[in-house]
Image (cartoon, rainbow, N blue to C red):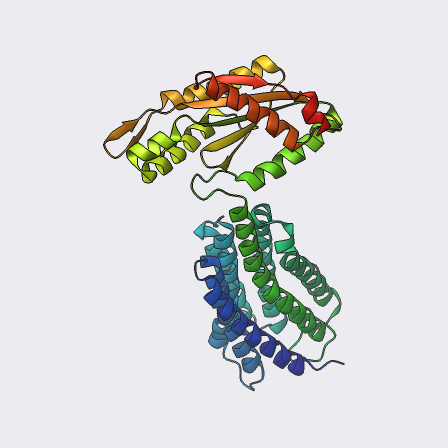
Length: 395
């Protein structure tokens, strides 16, 4: 039979190494409050488990210290839950922590003072951990939505398997096993519980580390697809989106609408008011355009003072209406820079095409760009609808 005391020693070593890794992770991700709480929570949890294993090796057991030491470990687990909620940006109400802590104190105190039972104390401790794990699982859903599913798989698998294993061991202990008199009793349940705890703690340590790595990766990907000045999607994100929509529209034989617009006389604005004013104009335009397009349209800054919109429309009339709504919104909402008010208009070039096997991003963009050029040369501050010609489709 496995030696529970040796397993406990190995677990403490794993936790100490995990604490060191989380301190390093905290130093790397200083801006994340969740990572800080993971490092602190793991340290407190490790301290509590270490003291608990030590206390179980003593000949005399003092109820007050039994409850206190177990609560230190459980407090560390609740700190991990709090850190995960902070990391997910979905905090739990304080009542959740108060209720869970109160349950742990009450049950541990009862089975340490009123009815001395090591078995029931272990079960009360395990139930509290199970509830903490369930709370953590609910926050992994929000992290997955933000940072991707890959970032949460290890931790979610660890917590899920721990909940299943510990629930099974609790039922087994209650139904078939005699009461234990010491944590180190060599019953079939205790070594299995320790092995399960080792596996859970080890994978949880790395699971939390992967969460912070996943967030960093997701942030980098968002930055790579985001224009720094306007906070709109950039050209890379726009090309990916239009390629994806073209592929989807081919299957459904839909119309595809693209509009390109840029600021009229933008060089004059820069020359007259300075480049800071030009940046302010672009930020203002992005804000107004975002409000003017519909949620299912896709707006991006594709370079300099040039922007593009993928419109979801059913015919040319609807496309012209949507483009003019955008143009008029920008004309009406003047921008201020310091004490000066700057008039702002845009020219819009649109194209509407039926998606087919030969239609791609380059063809659409060339056609919309020609329409934009025509809008510029025929007076500016207007919408021109072009066509995807035979030369485009042959290119």
